[in-house]
Length: 180
Image 1 (cartoon, rainbow, N blue to C red):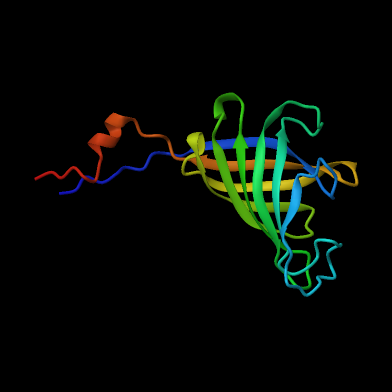
Image 2: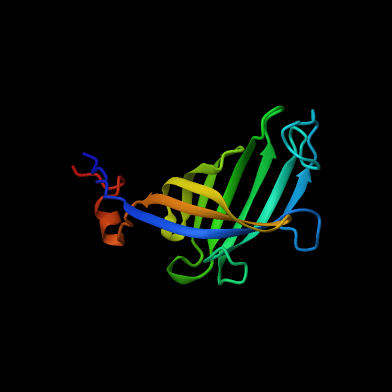
């Protein structure tokens, strides 16, 4: 007989952070074109990133408040691609790395689409460290425009994380242990 694992009640996680996005072509730009798409031109998006298939890469500072001088708490790394020939739609994949406090070194992996909605929603599809096995969603919205090339997005993470097993629990419930 194989001993089965008993599911633990997931631990809820709620995090709010602010992503400092620097757009354009200046020295502080944090989002850059990685691949120019083959087109056609998407009339709903502004140049220069308006070709179907344009792929951008991001490395954005994450802070504890919308103010760009507030304490840094992490980074958002990822990519997004123009994924519609006529609508303002990007497919996104990004990872929030937290670099301070109790979640230092832990990540939350997210993905979905961005369109012209005032509020964006992405799926939490996993994580590492304190967020290993995370599931849930992220609500994102534009909260501050510092300049035409510097905007701030608020990310509200609503997730659940499986309660970690202790080594003793893992050993006693391992599927490798067979009762005869």
